[in-house]
Amino acid sequence: MAEEQQQAFLAAVAALQQQAQQAALAQQQQQALNLSAQLQAQQLQQQQLPATFPNFNLPAVEKIGGPKYRQLLKTIEEIGKDLKPIYCNNKITTERYKRSLIHLRNLIRDCQSEVEKERVSQNQKLTAELAKLDKDHSSSRSGSLHVIEDYSNPSISTREIPTEGGVFRFTFLPDQSQLIAALTTGRLALISLEDYSITQSDVISDTMLLDVSPSPVPASTTVLSSTNQGSLILYDIDRMDTVLRWDAHSLPWTNEPCEVWTCEMVDDTVVCSGGEDTVLKVWDTRSTERPSSQIKVFDAGVTFIESIGDNKLLTGSYDELLRVIDMRAPKTPLHQVKCGGGVWHLEKCNGGWIASCMYGGWIIIDEQFNPIAQDSGAGKTLLYGSGLAPDGKTMAYCTFNDYTLTVSHLDDNRTWPEIYPIPA
Image (cartoon, rainbow, N blue to C red; front, side, top):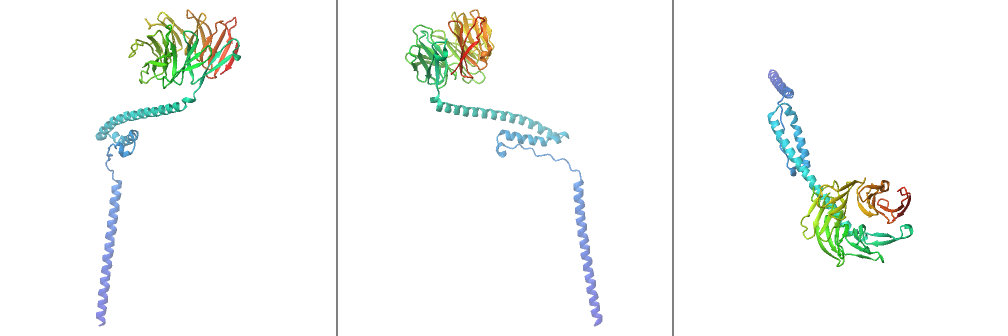
């Protein structure tokens, strides 16, 4: 019995040893498999893999959630991924790169178009806002004309005539009994020099009036006025009614209406205009679809026109030149004078004309168009108007930046040492 128990015990031990050996072998096999897997992984990491190229597909605008500019940035980023393979002379990537450059050029043009559309849109919004602001505040505009009754003592002899709007330009009517003024509110104002009463027209333009010129024909009641939006207006001051209105000047590079700085009635059928487009135009009021002639000798905006008889025009321009032009042969001016500043206005005086030359001060020119006196220092604060009294010794000029009218007297050396500024 004891022997049987001993044999059974030995058999159990042998079975346990066999199981232990099998378990150890299985563990060794698992370890070997793990080691083999690790070695394979290391070999894969160390192995030189062939280059893989990006799958280049341009995203649509809606996929990147932005305008063409954002698509352009994304395209540039994608093209950058193709640069290294191109260095390896990969033909597929090179061809794709060429196609991408063509697409990139198209995107750049689209971006430029978007920028231009945005600029136009912003300009339209700004114009609308300014128009609204202008309309809201037009009733608060004010201006005035100052009449100096005794220029020898201007400080105590000035009479102020209030106007509804700012006075851009004014001139005498042919009978010299009235002034007519172009106002920034789109109205004309008639001022009597006898009792200083003022009569204003209805609004004849929803923009500013820049100039006014009466007809030189005796007994005519027609005047010509210009606007800052490219148009000319014939107006009857007796009936207080618009006779004719037409578009006259526009900028050549945008075709947008531009400022018509000056206008002149040669007679009741022939009128002239000059604008920011650097062109002086001659019109027949019986047919205003196109100008009778266009005079293009100016290098900047035309600021002043006056008929001086015999088909001759006296002109001023921002290009700092005074010109005398024959309308029958306009290509070569009869006279040309360099004035040292933009020639804004010309006024007849004894023996010639006096030119208001903005930052160039004033200059007096004789009837042969030779400069005989000048004060460029008077333009330091932007001189827009000047005149010489009939005595030939009293000068008056107004400057814009300091709101001042200055009256001075000429001495025997043709200088103006005595100055009496009159702040407006």
